[in-house]
Image (cartoon, rainbow, N blue to C red; front, side):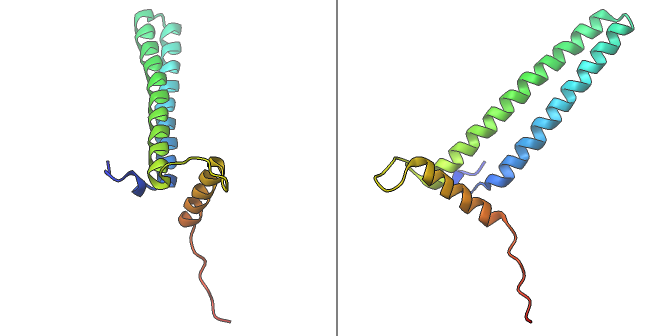
Length: 115
């Protein structure tokens, strides 16, 4: 992990969070289905074991999501420094400006075509 958290690309961080959490939740759903199938087949001990895996995966997905959110906030804090309301701008305005700059920086610049 970079020691300078201000260099982390926030858009990439959000995309990574979405992909990783979705993958864990998909695995959770697969294990829940396998547990249901095991119950239908009469394999109750296997069903309980797989259901425990699904429960653990669900907790893991929440934890991963939370940690990504914390990293996002820490990165944003590193970019903005101390956000304290001033007489000119509120913290919300400062954060909105920072996010707008991040979005603008991540967008492609259109090519200029000579007419």
